[in-house]
Image 1: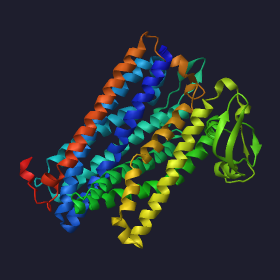
Image 2 (image 1 turned 180 degrees about the horizontal axis):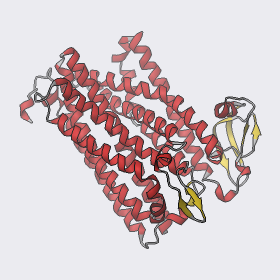
Image 3 (image 1 turned 30 degrees about the horizontal axis):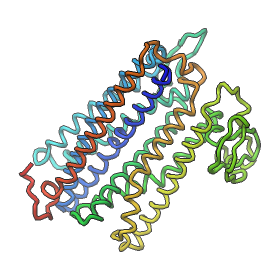
Image 4 (image 1 turned 90 degrees about the vertical axis):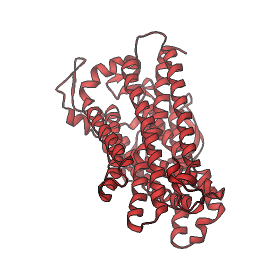
Length: 445
């Protein structure tokens, strides 16, 4: 593995891990706060136990996300020094503000974990809600920095120099809203399905059924919001990409020929050498409508761009198709849950529905990783779109592949540790969190 490939592989691996930790950290506090609100309104002790159980999970995920995020900040300087040298002064503001949001989140977690029976009940609830709010803001700020890489703004590039820097304009670039919206919705969808799947599994095992059923319904409700919101936010993101990065859109659809009334492609195998896509299902004129609300509008094809500026078409296309496929499945599952909630409540306890959610546990994160691949790989060969190529930003330090092996081991260890701790928390439900369990003894902790 050469140094350039090792640097890219390390960044991809690190982001792939961290995006899961960060998205769970963005959403789980809201599930926790909702369960807490239910307890305050109903005085049902099961909701109190659920809130405490989820709060411990939030703490574990916060710690893991903090470690992986810190590692990423070091990796940016280690792997891409030329990028940080020029880009750091421009988009440093969202990273600085993200640090502030991180500290607020840490303080709020501390207040919430140790605030039971010590604070005013609604102030205590607000601390939990603030954990989610600050985590959400933190995620949006990081996405704003990434959006700047896709839509550089807030500076003039003159004779190889970055001048007239405006950090506000850089942070609120043309891509930040659509990316932040889609990322937030996707995080709610992915985390909602993952949590619902875990609790569905416990219900199927007939363990603490009432406790896990309450948890399942809350998580599935959040998953439903995310699943139904994803196509809307995705449409906004796609229109933004079509305007700013038409070559990325062409790669997503493996769209080689510029044409009016362009078809939307489902599936297919791209052939970059022959510049065509085989075995695809094409829906006439739909792509044109999706990108411009006009069935006859023109959509640029890859052939309109220099071939040395093409991203890896097959990778981007397959990632985009993967995202759409799993997103569509989650919409169907969400619709089933919505129908069951209002018209067929007996379905909520049926094993087939619970097994469906169990199978769908990873679907949201598969779609999330695929969408992130579209965003990052689709920007190649640029690290700053249209300004700096990725190959020009990589570190000159030799032997970077050893760093890749080391960081891979660290992230794998973090994942195993997190899985062990969360599994341990689930096993502790009967003793610590479910007041209806005969073994319940909260003082045993």
